[in-house]
Image (cartoon, one colour):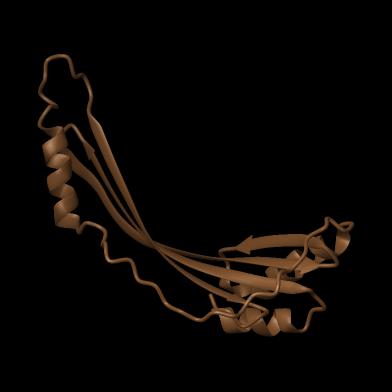
Length: 151
């Protein structure tokens, strides 16, 4: 995705305010059945959400297709433009630019396998007919920009 591309589209619209949030999620999934690892999958998903305010109304649109950023901006604008005044007012706040990093990290694959093995130690209990363990870890990164210059 590209927030600068998004900014260029939205700056040409007559809005009272707009913002865009781009999220990248690295996802790890491990599946175990009957004590055996069946699947380890790592993938990345990206998406961008666009919010516009025009004449007291809010429009929102979202896409995971990097080639549809312009259409997503248009859709958000059209929604806000098509609604009657909903009474939304924009406050006068100072712009802010900053970065935040969360110190925690997602467990690595080997750590996840160990967790599954500890859970699966009960698979041989006589009353357990079937055991399945799935672990999904999502590690998001979010970027934000708005029409007032905040990032």
